[in-house]
Image 1: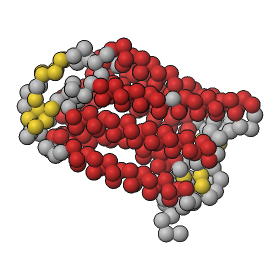
Image 2: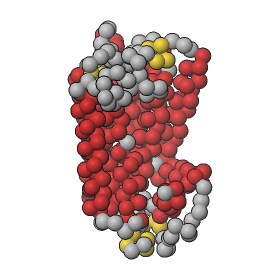
Image 3: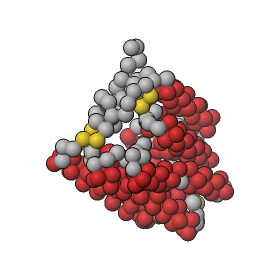
Length: 309
């Protein structure tokens, strides 16, 4: 599995796989690649090499996404350091843990969108989309960090006019990811002749499930809390703070968000094993069932960690 993942960085997303052969030369403004036949034994590289290759390619095609994700990772480290010195608790956990989690999550999201946008030929389009993603999600991370510094909750907080305004702005920035993802989905479809079919479908499925997870996030906002059957801030799982006693809508939201990373990589692995795109749709169906089960269980007020109460 590790070797197959390593090959992803070398084959890139423009490769066609047929009967074990990765074919051909595809040229465009976004990339120009000439690849020869690869096998599992052709490239034995370490994980640091893979990450370094990823870093260079992301920086070359989407420098804004690359530098933005690095800045967000610095923010994650900084807030984790603050957590070691400041014992203040908000919602049952150290007040700096939540900003740290969001910095890391947003860094992964920004880098992922930057990587997916590499498949689009227009440099202007890539730059605009990267700016939109980084600005909107950067502002959300800023507000969450600001509220932590003020010693007050960032989500579901309408105790004052200022808190209500900041919470509403966070909602606007989060919901903005839906039209962004839809635009990227449509643009990928327009460039379908340039992108291997299985990889194209993997990216689009990931984007579609990501949009679904954004809708789940909006539902949490309408619900007024992420916990069902209890109050937010009770005993939770370490770091993520998912409720151990009641239903928690964040779990399904979390799983759905990471479809954006899972399905493009899965599409590559399915292609490498010479399986049909139908296999990708099968995994998508299973993923939807799991996500729906997590959501419905949480909405029923039952904790995932208390399957047999």
